[in-house]
Every structure is written in C-alpha cells, then in structure tokens.
Length: 94
Image 1 (cartoon, rainbow, N blue to C red):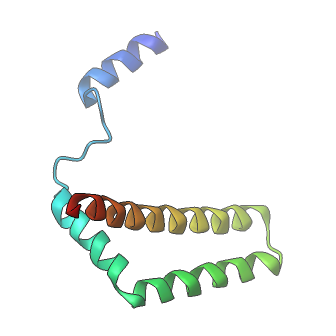
Image 2: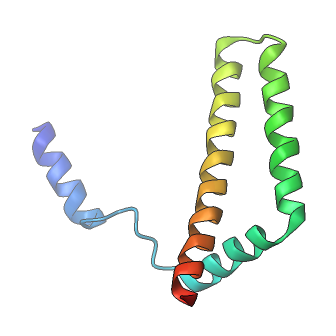
Image 3: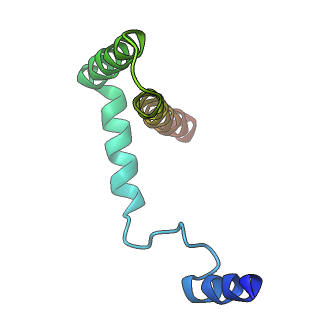
C-alpha cells in the first residue's frame, strides 16, 4: 500500500520534483559570477565563517550545534557554486 501511494505521489509531482521552472538560471549565474568578482562577498564569507566557528567553541545544546554545522555547510555550498560559475566562465572564454 505504501509503495502504491509513493508511485501515485511521484506521478503527481513529476519525475524530477527538484527542477523549478520559475528559476531564471541566467540571472542566477550572473549573480553568482558578480559575487565572485566582488571583494565584499569574500569579506562576508570570512566574517560569517569565523563567527559561526566561534559560536561552536562556546558550547551549546546538540540541536543548536547541528544548526551551526548546517549553516557552515550551506555557506560552503554557496561558495562552491560561486567558484563553479567563475570556473565555467573562464572555460567559456577560452
């Protein structure tokens, strides 16, 4: 029964529920690249990462600790996306 409900749900959602058609990828790529070029983002990344790491050192409840870890991982993912876009554009220029 559970399997049948999952199949129906997947059919209703579509094959790939994570593709959002309303996202303009060109605009997103431009924003990522402009962030790579600006010194302000680099300063923000450094400040935010150090701030979260300092929070981790003071000790907190387990739930709060994992929230901070999640924030660091999201910050890293954003930075990775920015760097990927910069690399993609470098390759495109060649």
